[in-house]
Image 1 (cartoon, rainbow, N blue to C red):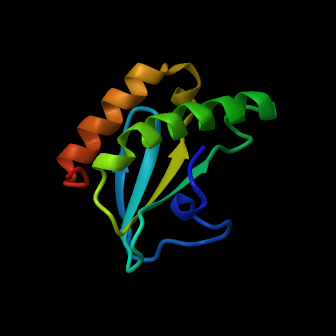
Image 2: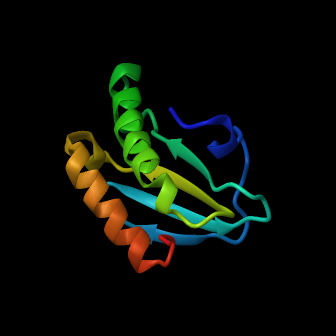
Image 3: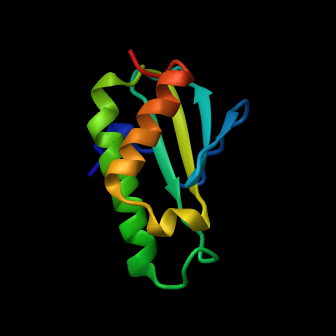
Length: 109
């Protein structure tokens, strides 16, 4: 589980974000003045009505972010909005996609 310092608050909005499309999510990134990078995850009921399924998707993506957390530049706010394609994606594919995307956007040290 992400530490409290690394979580976006509920209802916190990103104002001047950069939007990136990946196969399983839309990722919104914004610079922050805070010391730690913060992450939020949104899985809509349109994806699946069952909370168990939505939570499992959220847990897989959160675990991949936690693994990359030491390499991610500080002072960023990142919001993941999960797409329907995120239902069938496995952990390794999520990790590879995030690594590739974050490296391309200059978020990795």
